[in-house]
Length: 68
Image: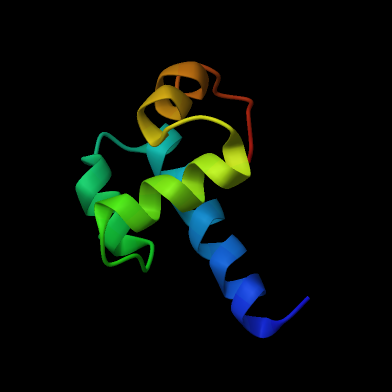
């Protein structure tokens, strides 16, 4: 795995954790996770998770035992 790909996956993982552990807005989370546009973030997130950030939050935020 290249370093760029590794960083990309770390950024997505960071966003996953924030989506289920905080009430921060998705916009705040995407910038905190190293992305610079909503469209890039949504595309990357969907590619890895097969759902939007909003769907991911809704699906997993109620499950306290889930760890991405």
